[in-house]
Length: 234
Figure: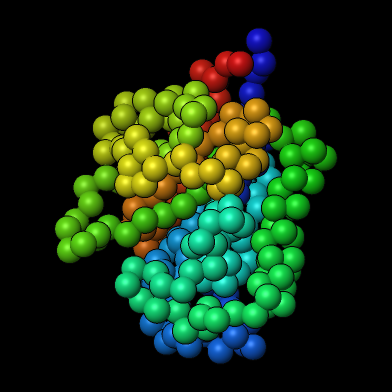
């Protein structure tokens, strides 16, 4: 029986940053849009750092906005470089040249995933957690979910985390508010294909709206992950 410890975890945060280099001229968008969920997962950069410190584990964060290229998509996915998001056209992604496509793949996408591959191999990673956040309002309706745990065909760790969160009287979604079975996404690529226990944790982003809230969620997830790892067997 394999035993898992928190320092064997790798945390990844695909959408941690809203950074766009100056040469992209904000992709034709205003700063207002670049500070919204359309551009990145609000609060996840700070949460992933805080949680990794508590778990004493490695963290890898995406360094660019998902609007340049979405690190949590397969390269064959038509939304990997989105031309429209939530009804908003992204002018700087329309009619891209093949050389620009290759540049974004090489400089951003491949670099990120190669770093994850190297870390899994060199740091003897045994578990992968992916952190994301979601908007509290969707189509003018408030989402009551506080956390969503997304999974693919390997639901082992995800199911344990869901149970642990529910024991704390939290409103938790199982493959809600999104589904976790995208072929070629980060959990498919680094978790499922490497046969490593993995789970994607979505946090409603109003729970991450200031440093105090972020630390509160981090403490909660630290407790949850430690208990979940003790129950995890393979």
